[in-house]
Image 1 (tube, rainbow, N blue to C red):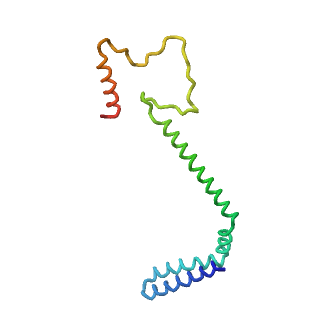
Image 2 (tube, rainbow, N blue to C red; image 1 turned 120 degrees about the vertical axis):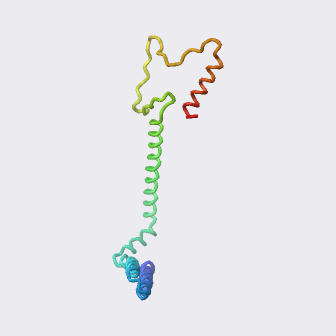
Length: 145
């Protein structure tokens, strides 16, 4: 009952403001204000206000809204975790190759023969300092420095 009275008062006040605006010869603005002020009265007459007031004071309705909020939060969390995993899977590895997602990664195979060459050479005798600086240069080049 109180909600209907408040909505009716808001509509009456809006129509009064629309009348004053029309008196000042701003007819387009007055028509827009009148349209907005008729919305609360229409909601009262259709029964939406009574339904909303009953819902607002119902503990069952609040429990339902809480469950809907929890479900929405779970959707957001799982979506962000999924995006983070995809971003990590698509990020280039240190050797420049793309990583495969964990679900599609092939199992490791071990061969019986000699180990394949990885591209690194054994340091030459007396070139210990040069090898250290070449690693640093490679890192700097990788980062564009």
